[in-house]
Length: 136
Image 1: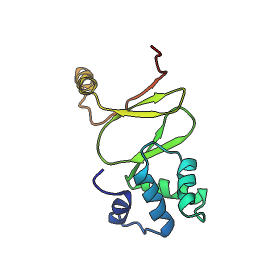
Image 2: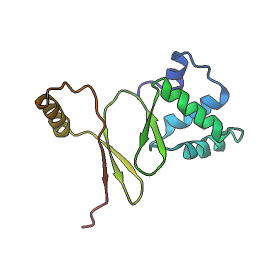
Image 3: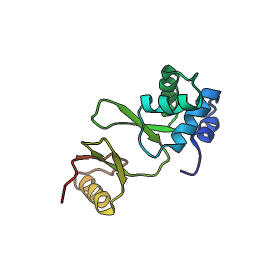
């Protein structure tokens, strides 16, 4: 990601309060797809005054501004990642909940081909694969 979430939020005209700055910093540092509870735990470790309600309001605001993307990976929790414009798909490990990001040119080409065959120009998509690790 070339711009921080804080910078993108400020550029969108959002007032960056101290809690929002902490939450943005936590999101920028995340190398996973945290849910609101995980974000709250990480943010509260920096500033214990940050409430779970503040985290929910902030992620909703960031999502409405196109700064965050919300995902539902089938575990009943909304998870978040920066909406940085870089396309990737997700493979979710059903045993651990780990989310693996990947890009596959063959899949991308096949999706374009299918859309064209059905008479459409593809303008976007989300691919989420759910799996269990194969033990050798």
